[in-house]
Image (cartoon, rainbow over all chains, first blue to last red):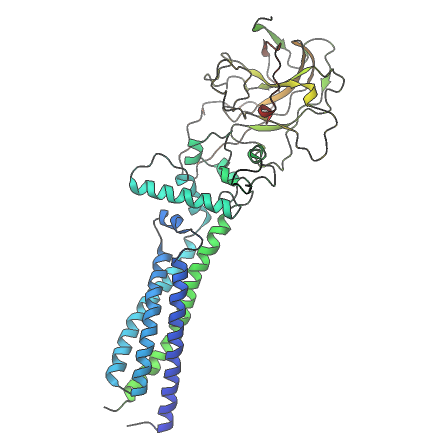
Length: 260
Length: 206
């Protein structure tokens, strides 16, 4: 039996509107995830060295899911307007698959928050920064990545160590085994630099005179962007999923009401 | 020319080498706002400004660093079983009084890494081998004769690195703790060095 014409029209209108929103959100999710994957803060080598770059995997999935959502929303709009059972069945099945992928991506990104702790980055920095005796190519690659990333991080964000320069004093490290404590209480990049990239006053930096060395830690500069990425992918994805759930329910109801 | 090394001079526990040697306030650590006040092989003292005010300008001020007994690393080129060494010598002219405000006048003990292994430089201000505790005092010499000195400082302990799940580099750890009442070495033997040539080493002082 067919519903009254007005009811069907309203349902169709709602479904088209729902799909338009899904399409736009899909494009937004793709754009957001491309932004994260492009690693604007240059922190990817740190994650790579922890051998757990799940938030990047979640972002990659987000790129493809967003594009899929956009394509499927167009299919959904066409199917609803034409009231075509086949098109709508294809739409529902593909949308469920995309839903599952997006759910996986969101949960992965959301659970990363507990993984990115100060101690994780501290241990990695102490073990890999400036490490010279690497075991194999992979180890060498990771050590170089970590060293380069930390050097740029300390230079650009004006910070030193994870919690502060005392990290280099309190703990043994690969850096400490290569450089004497008297010459390098902390790495050179912890010093305040002039325009040419050399320390303003090296002796004052070694002494730890306030103003000549970076006395704050880099943890905020690392965890800030990473948490933003994790939360951005996770919670925007969850919002899209909630909306998509409603639209899917409506589409299934509409599909069941279409006459053959 | 003087001989390179003369018979050692004994300094008594209370710091006097003989009757009537003036006693000065003990050396103090630099301001705690310095992030590198103590590291694992260096520490930083305030310069002895306005302390030796009654002496002539050409007096040489030395820093005497005393090591806890029995802890001296045998690899140090300072003579076997030395209990103290002298370093950071400079004329009183380099410690003008009063100190200009805003100037950071410090002495960094342990900063010279270039001469640490050099046996020909026994007065090298090389990195300290262990966490101490060390005690220091300033000694004023006029032609190798002591004319003034400060009291011994409070014991200075350096930072020790702990393992954060990381291997700690091997440090001589088989030392026994000193008793809590220990405040000065029992006897200090100080080799007299040829101070005929006085080196002005502003870079070495930091």
